[in-house]
Length: 158
Length: 412
Image (cartoon, rainbow over all chains, first blue to last red; front, side, top):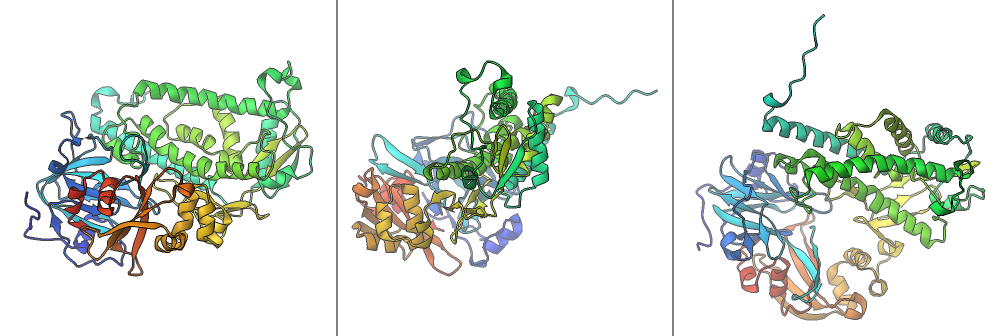
């Protein structure tokens, strides 16, 4: 698996905000190119993992409803204090998203498929570039007790 | 005479039309909900004439003479208002007098309110059963508009994703803490009280069903609801007595922040989040009711003695995770560089189970992105106790294996 796919044209945060109309906090670096990566990467309380890395744990049933990512993006998860959403944005007709996924760990928010680089945006965390491919977006959890058997779990809202 | 054009039905409507209509309905419902959230958190002085008129109307409806009104600054002040309107015990059904004429007024008003709730609740649950609930992921309650775009029925989205935010905002994070507080202070919350602005999780929700066009009401129900919504818009809690009705003012200060579900939650880092004119109220951080010391003077000793985990977490975040682990003398299990987050370290601590209950470890991680002041925020997560090292612990929080997490390329 190639670790990094270099796309001829990289985007900066200011390009992204201009294209999507989504705002980010002004103290983030706006003019640094956002790396487009094919490996796992984290954005706050979310993790983007290549689908193949989780083969077996995460499954997409045949009847899953895939939908194109609209121009204003898909809110993958709305954050905690301040209600900041993680938004998946893509050029038209380049990315599809489904929330019909099965996850043994119950952490997957959905699966995305893209044939062009797409981005996940968050007002506080900036942007994450995602190379073409199929990925799972998972959220973060906390827990107590032991990893096997009964664990008290809760989701993290960053 | 020309006939009016019949409304177009069925054949000409496409699925896209239906979805657009559903989206409009849900947007309208969200607007109405936010309106009611504002009412529930309102800190304006009570509209006394409106409240008294509405309560009088209710008394008239149950054929009782209009009471004398006693206004108090807060619900806590109602119990020592020194009036005989001290709440009567809730009438147990089998203990009620045989004839309604002998019932206490509170019982009659309670019955009237319950009837309103039954009628509407019945219709809602019937509709819900008919549409089924299988099309909606229950945890995806944060994006109602997306659910509609995916084809979920508007009614279902409203009941599962729009109204719960109102309930959580007003009932769970304001009404319940206030009742707890009243209980713990030895007040007398056992009597029948009506909650005025803090009852909007019911009254406001009924109004939402009505105004969004999702439910049609009978005229008499609609009129009855009007009286209750007028009360929710004009005053705080009130206690219907036979001769005297005690009515509370609204708080003078309510500080809240947006909550992830689209509602709001009480939050204030300086002073009480909800405060009445007589000083009664409570402190809250991110929606959790906390004792005053969490805001004014959080110390490791107090944190160690605090039984409530949520409260403890709020207090720790006030002094900072690093300062806490140091001051509390937590044992460091291990530290490792955070993959994908250059220059940052993951640290794993043992949590003493005598104060933290279920055995667990504490993982301290550092945010991938900068705060406004140029620092990176450190945050703590509890993880199961059998995770051997920090990377395995961090991996577990995302459901990964340590080697998978070690390949993390970037964290923002």
